[in-house]
Length: 435
Length: 169
Image (cartoon, rainbow over all chains, first blue to last red):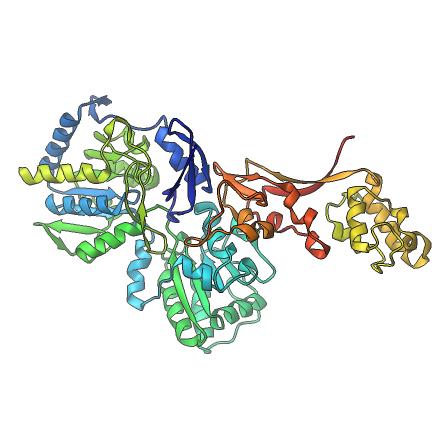
């Protein structure tokens, strides 16, 4: 019996307190501490859906191929293409992401990660107002108010509230009792089930976040009184408590969820929310308001950080003549306009998560898939290159939900000596250089 | 009207005289309420309740609340529904008994494994597992602390349930 400590790569929380109990054969006996998402991640190394050999499509069927043959075909496809797109990279290490950007630069391609339709938007917009970021450890030890706006971590990141809300921190010894949870959501999600006596559950009318934020901005600047009939389906007393908590607390963290990312016809609620935070930071004399961007993939923030450090732009990078050029496009508009002739997908499943119209267009062009398990995209790809599972079979670096870099650990050797995403991309990059 | 037999001894305590007169066996009203719930004593074992006419209403309510289950021996159970539980570990962190030996933070101390003998819950393979029910506050603590239900209250999946079940003898 052996115990090993490991970082879990099930979601963006990257829990570092997971213990693996091994039996005498060196196989996983039990996983201690991990939630269902984490458990499935570790169990997936023995999954029936693992891809173990490279595959090439011949007459509508995927046929097993040797590595040399598959790489040769891949290079041929890259050479034949003049406008390739690279997409994915949220579930791989930062090292592999850097290689992906180098590949895009070498082949004059367009590279984008899942953050382009997720929290990359928040990161980009927060630069216009200047927003303070916080870390989860700070919320544990010093947090007072935790505000979930359009975010339901109970479903997406199961252990997040356990850590930041329930844990007993250094200056918040009583943990749950001393922290206040505020939830703003149009539906009563599972996050509403953990409300304590001082918490504020707010059910907002659907698509009226903008109305509430604009009113809060005026109320905080004392340009407006709280109307007696309430705002956006929230009554006056709840609003009074909300405003009092926001302007008169020491440490406020706003967790922005995916529900806030969609702009409406009247304006952009996310931009307004960031402006509200800026106002709160001037009005609040006791402390400050900071944000956490609630993304789900374990290294989505990593792509933003890697791209920023290598190119100065966090997503939607278009290269031409090996230099970065300005573009308004993102992966969706690129595919919509049919502005590509080859797609290289790394560790994601666009066929099942992009809109049907977009994925229909994506299928019309040749596709290379780099992934470790079968998914919908697997069944339409022309070349499939299998890799090891990052964080279990290879090490690397990943960025946690609060933009803190975490070192991932290797636990087992991959089956069939599969290369890691990083090794495979280096190999492709080197071959392109040789030519 | 259907009366659901209560699992909460505070409901029973509210209907007792709350004078701690010392005429019954456990001596205090709080302890009497718990013994009443477990079936170790009967309502008639509280002399003021049946003798003093000012408690007439309370007596009637109490008899209605306990109903046919009076005198049947009951035992504390914590049941965890594996279908609902997603292993978030809130019960591990929030349990005041666990907190004395371990608490989970991102960079601080984490629950020990193999667990301490006092630890109540552990997350194994993505599901919560009950380790030592005899350490629960509902058995070991005194006074109001005995009416502890934090694990049940804060379970976001409502997978955890505290109950007193009749034991077959």
